[in-house]
Length: 229
Image (cartoon, rainbow, N blue to C red; front, side, top):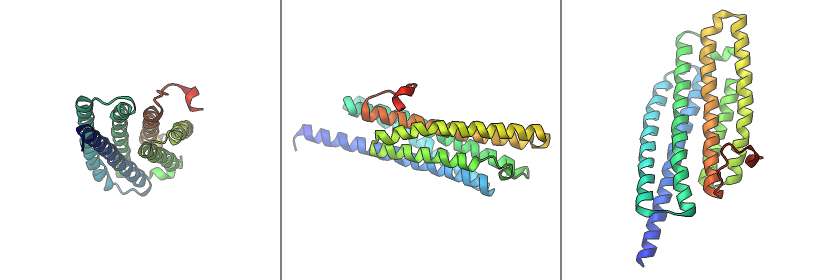
């Protein structure tokens, strides 16, 4: 095999391995979010420890992927679409790590509520529906990355608006709860924090999708509302 082909083959393997590690990290974050949502509904606060332990694995993967990105740029000096892929990945893993942090916040909030002897599901404010919508965004964003599907990525970005609207509705309901019955204030504040964390997970899925569009099309559509219509 000519040296140039050997180098090219090795480079392709490096990029493929990098993408695999991103999807592995994404799978861990999905598990964190899903487990946190389940804990909210079931009160299985024992899972909080597992969610926190998974967060350490996510953090380790972020560091490893960042190192790999730096190594590839320094050693391979990628250009055009390959460079966009590496740069996009370096930003995607940051959002994945932060989404994992939000899942940890949800889990800790759930633990506080149940350990205080309250049942958050009695508030009937649609947390589960909001969380499922945000989790779907994360799954689809990762799917868009795996397939380098710009159209799917754009649909995820559009879905963020629905999550934001639903989040604001939940906040209004919780404020009403607190005004009508001051005894609900402590739990309501915890549920507001959980809702905010879920909304932020949707934001991170949106950010990941914006990077997928950048990788696929070379367009930076952040802050460009016209680009996602």
